[in-house]
Image (tube, rainbow, N blue to C red; front, side):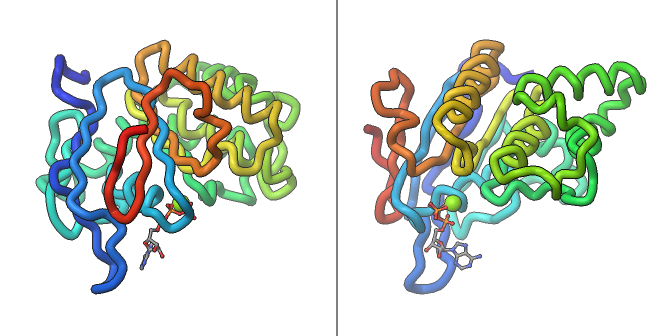
Amino acid sequence: MLSGDQPVIELRQVKKRYAPDIVALDEVDLAISKGEFVFLTGPSGAGKSTLLRMLYKAEEPTGGSIIIDGVELSSLSKSQIPQLRRKVGVIFQDFKLLFNRTVFENVALSLEVLGLKKDQLAARVRQVVDGVGLSAKLHRKVVQLSGGEQQRVAIARAVVNRPPIILADEPTGNLDRKRTMEVLALMDELNARGASIMIATHDDSLFNNTHRRVLRLKDGKIEEL
Ligand SMILES: Nc1ncnc2c1ncn2[C@@H]1O[C@H](COP(=O)(O)OP(=O)(O)OP(=O)(O)O)[C@@H](O)[C@H]1O
Ligand SMILES: [Mg+2]
């Protein structure tokens, strides 16, 4: 369970340096409350993906601390990382799908650890795949799908186990306007059901005229728009 008033995502003085002259994040402080829906923007190379990767411990900060749902990530042992990853659904910028497996298999994979019965699992997968408009392609191999369809599989896989935190890295990068709107509506729905959401994007049209919180990464710092 996510608890009370403490932020669900917190960065304290987080620094990420890849090389002496490449500082992706420079002592960033940030707090995201439970149930918030935030956009993270900034130019290409600003560090958006880097920030997201550190939140599920795919990357370590050079300094500072990151606290997810009350847990300091640097204190997690390797064997505790799967526990963190179950709380955090990630839509990767490069999808990371199993291209020779079907849509169903890709989405089902994140559910297998939950120990659902076979028919429960299949029902859940169908429902989520339907939610991203891919029912007709449930048993197609991912390699046979278009870029936009693959992106939607990646979204379905990230949300199928109903994680309390969803991180999405350019989740609409390959989608046309109509599909982009559908994905945003899906995110809204997940947010309404309680998920905390962070979407990294350089596409201003996603958050122009939004009432959502917008953070911009620039020169290693975060500013609120
Ligand atoms: N593994 C790495 N090794 C060295 N430098 C890296 C590595 N990953 C990222 N960088 C550098 O860190 C900076 C931030 O990269 P990052 O991928 O986080 O940017 P981004 O905001 O996600 O960009 P985009 O909008 O293009 O996806 C860039 O200067 C990038 O070249
Ligand atoms: Mg990126």
